[in-house]
Length: 286
Image 1 (tube, rainbow, N blue to C red):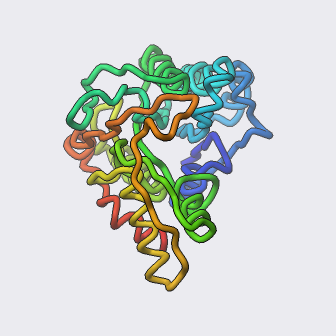
Image 2: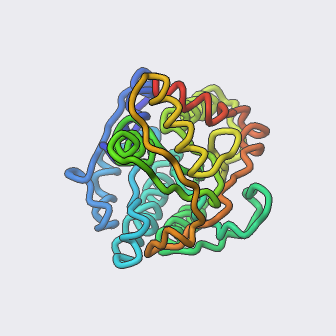
């Protein structure tokens, strides 16, 4: 099988490259080969490569910066996924695409399901929702996998930032009223592999949009506490943590207070489930 992965150095792409390498031939194209800011430039390379599956692991993820770069965020997160969906449909192959909890406004008091109406609070969320809609409009074979709070041992993310700051600062103030599920990129890649294997063996569920996060829930403060406990277990110095409300940490982009996603549809239709976020963090740190 020839798998085309769009995106090379991001957290999810790195994890996919580690976990899918033995499924077939991986063709990994980064920004030096494909410019997602120029969506129409993607058409010719995809048609020339003629893959059996496209995985779009590339995205504009600078949530705050997107407020001042809406056109760029829309080109990368909305128009490019639409083009990839069109080219996948032309080849008669599936597209796997990753989206975000930020398509919701966080006002719901229970976890969001795939049937809940999106209402993004920021430019990043609107651009990702527009990407979902562009893929759906093509009506080809696709999986849109919404995830949340992604971290790994590579790149820039909450885990790596906290590990550094906890050893540099005497005290850290961490938002405690935003709740979600920290999700290891390794978990996403493992689940993606399981989905591909079920498709390959004619055990696929319905194509469409699904939620894919770790099980359980916590706040950013709770996530920080778990990271701190790991450092303390190694005998490393660790800052004191102080919980604060979102209002005490203003940022250009508004964030949803409730980022919890109900992942039961993925389990029901594809028989793919994820570990608890605490176990996944342990696995990542190992």
